[in-house]
Length: 201
Image (cartoon, rainbow, N blue to C red; front, side, top):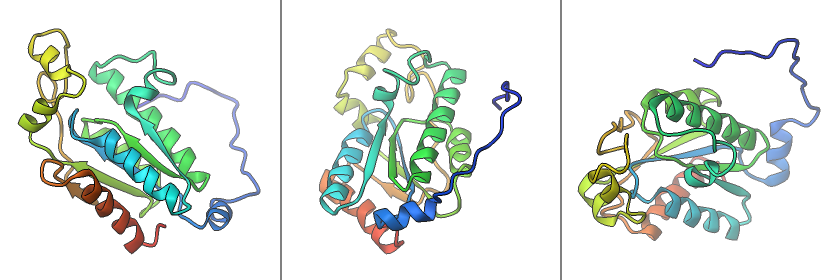
């Protein structure tokens, strides 16, 4: 658990509420949390959904694992402790996007169940949609778009999820998609239709 170090601070409540922003944007401020092994299709699917939502006049933003490590989390590595802090920070950022009425999509491996659950608890019920991209390790390794599995197998990358570090599958995700069976359009439709059915867009 992260310790509060800052003292003498006060929460300042704004005059424009989340409901005001949602009414203005004609959408719900939610977090769509994509999780799965490297190569499961998280970033590709998030970008596809972002494009679909944009065409429908919905405002969304993708928080991508690699991109975040170029800036906000550039001081973090891949130890269990750094992974926890990585997800803690992105959970807080995703909440800020949600509070602003924007549909935030996160594309992170986020291997630990406790970290994902902590991010969920930052939001109200119905504002967090966990999407588990369930793909066999063999399939993810065959894809290996960044050549990371090959490096991990060769011992060049330590603590690599699925090889030398664990991945804890979600127990009760809102959506499960096997991207070894569904193509990008079908996967995008599954999430989009879920959002429509739940009145989030």
